[in-house]
Length: 124
Image (cartoon, rainbow, N blue to C red; front, side, top):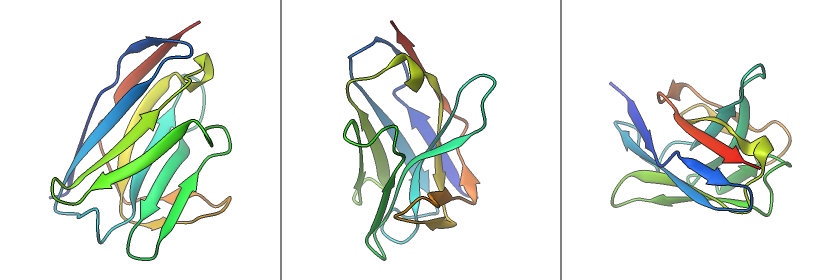
């Protein structure tokens, strides 16, 4: 059974930084697309970032480009999301996701597997 376990969500002031982590099992970060979605109250879930090592694709939503960085650790089978210069609009539940397809353009990320989510709160 695929498991994706997120950690690192917290309350942070605007302008601050957080790093989210996701431990994956069964799916491997080297062989499957993996990344992050987020969902704020009253809004639809949106793809934030994904990476697919097998075909060299990486995606960032326009709203996070230049502020967020996705990375993976093959030895630990983990994916990270470094979030800098956080804005109140970044507040959401962040979900680790894997499988499916990671595009490098506006199509974003379509995932098959999901974690339970971790809460990010940004105070202004």
